Length: 73
Image 1 (cartoon, rainbow, N blue to C red):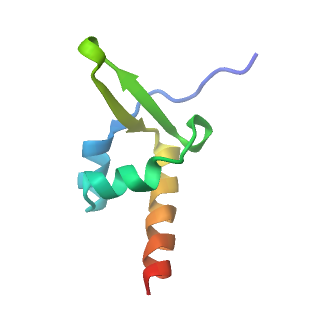
Image 2 (spheres, rainbow, N blue to C red):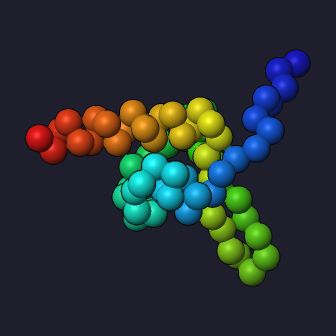
């Protein structure tokens, strides 16, 4: 039986601040990511939800940002 080894995640707001990006840019880069890419949706009361990333997801975002910047040049 495989156990999930993710013990914590960071919200999109925190990841954006840590990476020096806007929340909108991180969201645009992450919208096509899947759970196996390190992204999850966290749901709260009243249909509130927030996107969050594991450390693996944050590393994937760093790569997406790098590729996006290279593509823009």
